Image 1 (cartoon, rainbow, N blue to C red):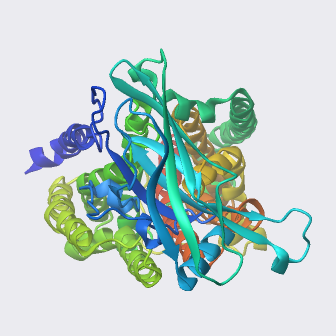
Image 2 (cartoon, rainbow, N blue to C red):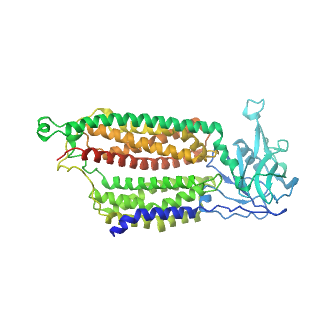
Image 3 (cartoon, rainbow, N blue to C red):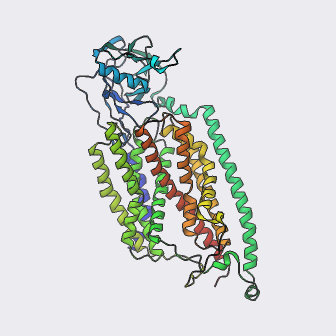
Length: 595
């Protein structure tokens, strides 16, 4: 059994890498070659208010012309989680077959349909389609506000003529763009029946862009020179922060510790003459196990799992798995890798809990399994109910929920238990350089700024200042329509975040010990994780100052899922902070004589 404990994490990591690579299957292998006149797949995906990215509806929820038989495309797990619901579109775009003002259908819009369309136009509804796996966007109508100050005078129009411009290279589709004819409109201003004739035009043009580079158009948008300048400014800003901080801390800690070591390293006779002060004074208490050790071990296990998950996601991103519009690839990878890394959480939590001389390891394992999944599940249940009430595509179908529950039951839970058993049998002992006394020493009264909350505010601000510029771009991508593809820069920023978190936590732990406060375990975890709280505070700023999101559904989705993400950051960075502090504390107490 000890052998399992030794090889478990390594074997699991290899398994995760292998399976996560397997999970990357292109949602629609569109390496298709076509002959002239061949049908090319065109799917209508969704419609929704432009400023509310989570609030999307099925394309035919709006009373557009629908084909006689609406054929639904089979979708992967990640696509469904992403809110994609692809159905056959009413337009026929056969390969290299031009059409001029071809009629889709003639329709008499009822009074209710006119009101429905007008509300959609007022909210800036856009549509999204996929042609040979290439995305197409467009607005469904426009509001004429020119020269009008009173909203009651605004005119509302629905576009009824769409033009598709398609570029091809030999027998492959390379690029597609659409534009709406500004002169072909249906007036929706008044509540009355109107006749609408929906038409479309298709133009084909040859290009020499190779098929392999057809996605570059979308990737390049986030690599434009002015964007790159800001990203590099962000990195330089972060690096300067790191250098100043690490330099400052290293200098102070080296000088202070050097003096401490000289002072504490004197021979026993001299040491007996002077009363011990500072961190040496509490050597008998510094390795006293923390309160709520089961919760502490569970938080470390979950944090380590989330850290591993983040690293794997970065590895997949850097090898180019998450190219733009690879529908749902990120969600699929998150679900699969989270399920497969649960063994790491079980192993770390139980082995650490047993090192802390905990006895009820089964309860600890249950706590580890629920610590992150529990709040996430409750948030999901609430938000899914909201999405069902809105009839939005964000509401997961029953079948998908069953699949996720099965993954949790058949993969996540067994691996968590296996990891826990391996951790329990690893029989590792806690390495403490000093013996712990029988009774805890009293902590002297400390000023207010040395209490947990001011220290957390200090610890979270610096790492947050190193990442906040990059945060804007990530938010604009996740909660907007901007494309983010510069994963290498994001990875550098992530490494900087880890370094700053580790350093600031170590510094605060030193000052805490120097003040003879030996309860550093939970404090180092809370200080490390406090960046998560700062990120959530940034969410409030972003929502009110940087975005145009509105409505109950979008607001609850934004704050609900961001709370889960920030909680995940709290666990992950808390683990980093504690591990760094533990290394530091072991090092300084190993360097002095402490009986």
